[in-house]
Length: 98
Image 1 (cartoon, rainbow, N blue to C red):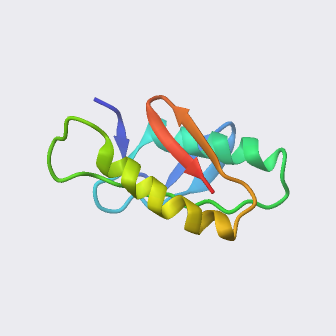
Image 2 (spheres, rainbow, N blue to C red):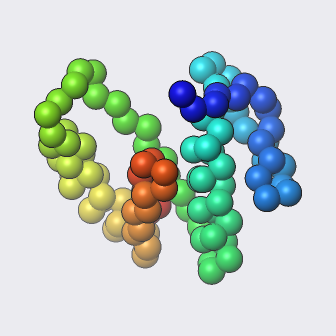
Image 3 (cartoon, rainbow, N blue to C red):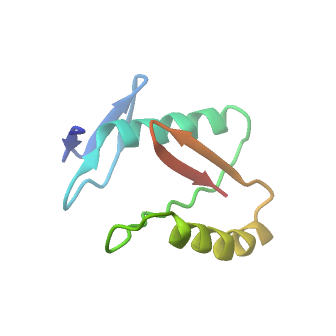
């Protein structure tokens, strides 16, 4: 079971980030992975824009068709206003940066 924190700040690589952990809290390895990706992108670009989608299906499905349909329908719309589209898998969490 991943460690969940309800702290108001997370420290990653010596930097402290204020986070909103109200409600059910934050999974620490996921938030640290996201912050590391932001740092990596900022090392190459002076400005970035990140959109995060937290999607869940109501019940178990045999395949990933629902998510595939969502990605195919939403990604072109988001690409219109964004020059970069990157999908990165980290620790089985898929992070999409548009």
